[in-house]
Image (cartoon, rainbow, N blue to C red; front, side, top):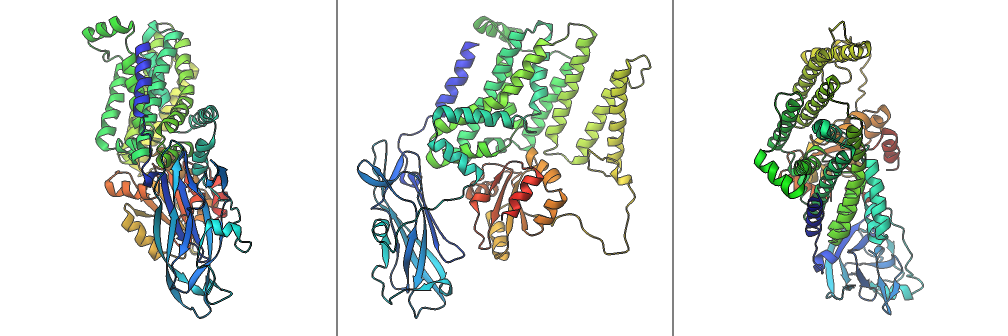
Length: 597
């Protein structure tokens, strides 16, 4: 057991190893764009342990266009190694002015120059990024003289001139970026504790629920030989393996943009893993006993004095990758931090801590299953049957990602009818409570079956198709929000952005295998108040279900590590980064978010 835990810990450390120095394009990421007021918004994103010299940071507009810089608003530098530097990513607002005789649209060349060093002892050569912008000069003020004294202003000069004094800006950030900044600037102990708390909160999401019958089934399958101590150790192995899987997948996504969890949501993987749960369920029903060959069990037992731990670790590892591929703000924040800084060690530690937090309730469930396990007998047979049915439900739940809803509803109904009869629906001598549960389950399962035959797609209201459709003579009011336009590539999105320029746009990253995406569809987007508000937006849905290269490129362009993610574009078709939503959001909270746009 100690060797297994050491192996899990060592493997995570090996994967988290990162290079000492960053390449220039990783250390510095310049960004510049024009806002609706014809101001230039320029930001230099710098990685962890990187700083930029104030005197070397220059923002210039090339002469000859009739447009020049009037003033620059931005952050103040700090003293560092007896030099004025920026220790965090500086952002600037450059206000432009025009000469008196300039009219119409003008194309300007804007240069963004910078030079900085790493705290680890490496200084980078000066770099310059050139941008070309079309400026509507009607929105610019006229300069005080036809030929201003300074046409290219650097930050150092601006801070020494009263008329061009740099004013600090407060940049509004999204929840994901705020979490990424927390990792950058926080104490390691506080970071790990914070992400442990994030994990505990995420354990209450639908992505973790399917793991409860898995860990419970693992414990129950041990039979009457299970003890509280062994149940705890098995649960711990399961959770640690799950945490290692989340960490490895997260670090890979952050460093290379490769979402390992999304890559595993292919039909053949889903069918295979669903088949594994069916096999486990049949084992619970007593059709056969699943175990390793005696020779292998003997070797494992001889070397580690325990058997079964490796199988539990494999189950935990695969469960994290295949059963629960969800993305929430804390996870996305850690991935953004890893992607921006290349610091896979601290980012990976945060992910590991979050994963352990997600697994704490699973450990409690596992220990409870071991502690309160009934003695061998009729109860034991019933408990095994219950967990066998739970395994079947997990198998069908996984099939929802790749199979038609009618098929999964039919399977749910068949399992429910069979289990209800097993519990004693028609057994007059059965205990009243047990029979009541069985009858309720039987009625609901039959309703599901009838619903499938009637074309219903609702698990909650399978017989809704029987409800009379009231048609008014007046014009019919459509209660649904406008339909999403589905796209799968950057080209399709760019075409829609260009077509709807000047309008508010909402882009929803969605996948059939994403549980939280379906929760957004069925709960948040279905709310009447939310529907009405969403009608104000052009609704676009990026379908990344197949995880093809064009879909990966689309996700990478907008920094999305996995669904659900909702981005908003302003009238200029620019992403409003501070308003990005990662993960599920309740209707009222989502409505309040929309009202701020």
